[in-house]
Length: 109
Image 1 (cartoon, rainbow, N blue to C red):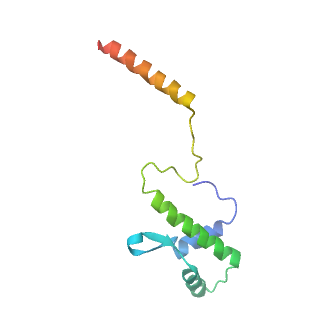
Image 2 (cartoon, rainbow, N blue to C red):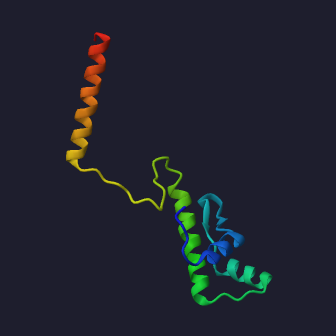
Image 3 (cartoon, one colour):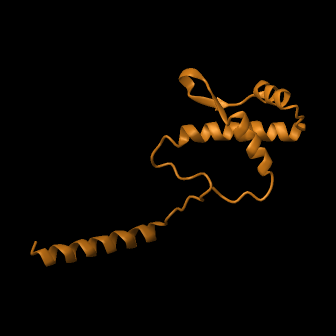
């Protein structure tokens, strides 16, 4: 996880409420206003509108990432996707081909 510089308490609340909830065949979905209101009532805490919206947004994003992360090639959400150029790809392919040629020559193939 990337470092959290501010608002860490919102993440604590998110995981205390439960970052997602089951949705039957749909898997997991984000928490809604009723879930968050029930938590506030039980804890005797009043969140601001901004805090509640942020927690619900984080929950929806978390649920969405759960679905995306089921793909084994899914990159971590906090890492920028690196795109290599055609030139870089060609250089890598040439280097791998040269390596394979040397290996085959050593083996007598």
